[in-house]
Image 1: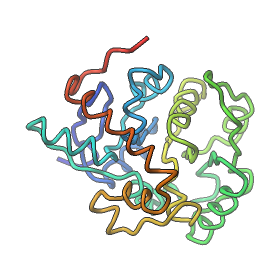
Image 2: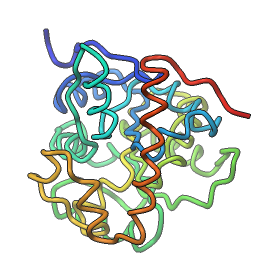
Image 3: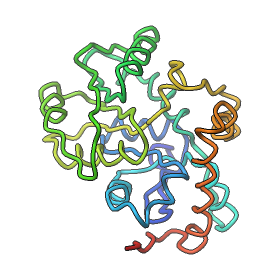
Length: 252
C-alpha cells in the first residue's frame, strides 16, 4: 500500500495519520486541508478547551508527534503506530518542489524577531518567501476572528499556509481559516518546528528527534520554562487509558 494512502487511526477522537513523513506530505500536497501536530501538554486539554477540541476533531489529520502518546498507545493497543515528529514532517515538506516556489507559501509568525530569523533561514535554504508572504499574528482571544489575515490570504491564494505560532492557538486559527477561506489550501500547524531549524528555538539534532527525545532536549535547554509544561503532560495518561480511540467527554 502506498504510504500516501496509509490508513488513519483515531486516538482520543482525533484522526491521526499512520505512516511516514513522505506519505503525509504527499497527501496534503495532493488534497490540501488542515494538518495539526498536537503535543502531549496540549492534548490533555481536549476535555476543557472547546476551541482546541473542535480544531483537532475538524483537522484532516494529525501527526503523531507526542512520544508519550505513541508509547502509551502502543502499550495499550495491539495496532502499534510509529512516532512521526513535527520536525521530521517539516523537514520533508521544505524539500518538496510544490512548497519551494515563489508565492507558494504564506507564513503566520509569532513576533517580528522570529519572523526575521525564520525568513532569513528559509531564503538561505532555497524556500522563496517574499515580505508579503509573512503575517505577524495578533494576540488572539478565546474567539478567533482575523479579517486582515483572511483578506491577505484570499488576495494571494497560496498553496500552503504555515502556522508557526503557539500550540493551542495555531490549531484554532487553522480551523478558522479552513472554515472561512473560499478555497482549500494546505494548512500546516507546525508551531516551533521552524525555529528548531532557524535558531529561533534551541536546535534539536536529527538523532535526538529520531529517538523521540526532542521534548527532553528542550527541557534540558531551559528547565524552568519547559519543565513544568512537560510535567503537565502526565495528565494525558489517564485520559488515554480511559478513552483510547474515543473523544473524551467534556468537563464543565
